Length: 64
Image (spheres, rainbow, N blue to C red):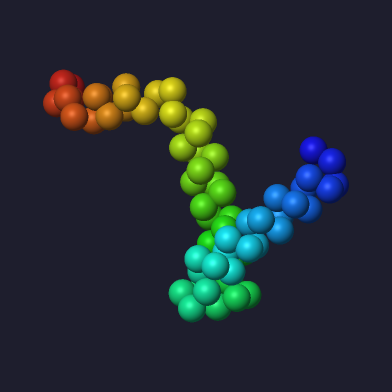
């Protein structure tokens, strides 16, 4: 990803943050929320392939 694309994405993210997070979080705390959401999204993406298996195992009674 080149610098121009990176800047466009960063601007988009901060624009959405301004629109959605205004009056919910102090402007200086946006980065804490965005970082957390980015990490959660990344984990969700990485674990998507095994999600159904995990849900199925969680709903089945465990035999010890």
